[in-house]
Length: 374
Image 1 (cartoon, rainbow, N blue to C red):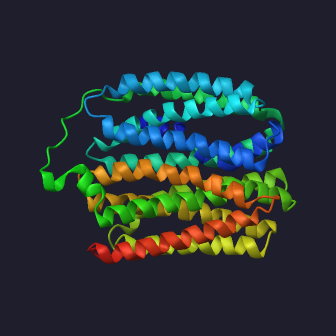
Image 2 (cartoon, rainbow, N blue to C red; image 1 turned 180 degrees about the horizontal axis):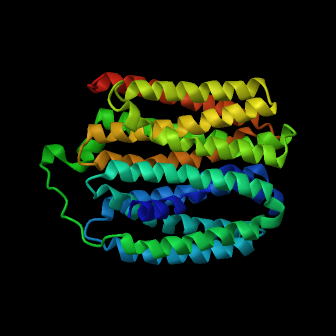
């Protein structure tokens, strides 16, 4: 059941998971500029974030199974349309926005369904692990066989996977318990706008922006560094697959070091990797830093989500944070698209270093706001 629900959730965010190769496909096979490709993916993700946030607020008493089936059918058709409209920028843009809105609903439905099980930690572990499996496989296969796959094959392939997700909606429950009633001093809004919650949500959002900013153009950086398609693909594949043990690290560390201190380690690992990329562009450094970035991204996510859950054990802050963090995922590629003008892709790494530094500062402040067991 967790695999099925996780598969639906992962398919609803595949543009984020395949960000660099999706941008590469659009640039090389649809004739888009780096700016257009970056902002197009940003607006698609922004649509997913907006729909997911609204859905998380309005999902009470809704039949999530029927809603998800309806939106996944829309996603299948819009992915098929995307395969044949990539050359028409305005039409393609509108199609991707519609796809994003539909998948935002499916994502919120599937993730919230995982949370209804007592062993939800295992469910979210599978969810994060599956993200990096899909990302790793895509980041290897698509660059290596890009000339064969092209834009058409890329979107048709994901339309097929959307159909598989549609089949898996049979595992989505349609009956849920009534939400717990709270007094006026403990409303959902009151909890979400508390200082610790705001800091955690902002930190999560900036963290996602930092990751997607560097992730957007790391494949392009490999190309201009004269690395072969196979070298780039293998480095990105291994980096993504290392996200699997990274995601499960929280089960090994547990509460031994609290929640903030492991996050600091993860942020510093990302900053170190990006600094190494700025200093050298040979294949060994590219491979090592891809591994460091993949591991640190997945390593931090469960700790951030656990921190959100610790602030509010009813899950309201987690739900809000997960949806709002997609705005970071959306704006990361957009900001990176601005700074890489002239194909200076290292600027996206500098941007990410700045964003990771801000994230580090936010969580250091948050660590002083909440009591945390060491």
